[in-house]
Amino acid sequence: MAVRAVLFDIDGTLLDTIEDLTDSMNAALARLGLPLRTVEQCKHFVGDGVRKFAERALPAAERNAEFVDRLTEQMRREYDGRWAEKTRPYEGVPELLRELAGRRLAMAVLSNKPDDMIRRMVRSLLPGVKFADVRGAMDDVPQKPDPTAALAIARRLNARADEFLYVGDTGTDMRTAVAAAMVPVGALWGFREAGELTENGAEALIAHPRELLELLSR
Image (cartoon, rainbow, N blue to C red; front, side, top):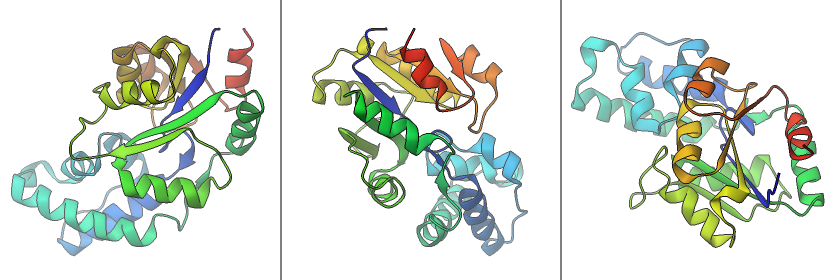
């Protein structure tokens, strides 16, 4: 593979964030007197930004703009105070990132979480990793699966899109990679199943972070 760079999603790919996300959403739902959600449900609600997470977490009868706005605001407040309580890198991720750096492959992060939150998480939970670019959701840039941000990262790294592996754990990530003409790699240790990843364009599936190194050696 003629790979010069690896672009990572973060939730469900580099960091296991689902318990803090679920706890925060449930605290927000409780404040509004709404039923709580399980971890397994939240694994399928996340991936498309906090507002979409809130919309999916609401009971069907309450999915109106007012309730979505209120729950989104509450979720942001709750998560801001608990995002690092249980969140940790997945087993094998720190070793993978060190090996990629040793091979002089550029690394970047792209998420649909707010940009300031993503930068905080990377600094705190992946210290010492030299990412060439870290980007979260910004008001003036379309979110994934729109390829705008991914292509902007490619330009910043002075690399062609087809020289990137895009590693993520959701259909949204795979569609982003396809739209950007990057190589879509599905992370099976994350929040979604193999079927969703392949249906949305994954060209390879890996069950452990170290398998990315095997993929690069082919």
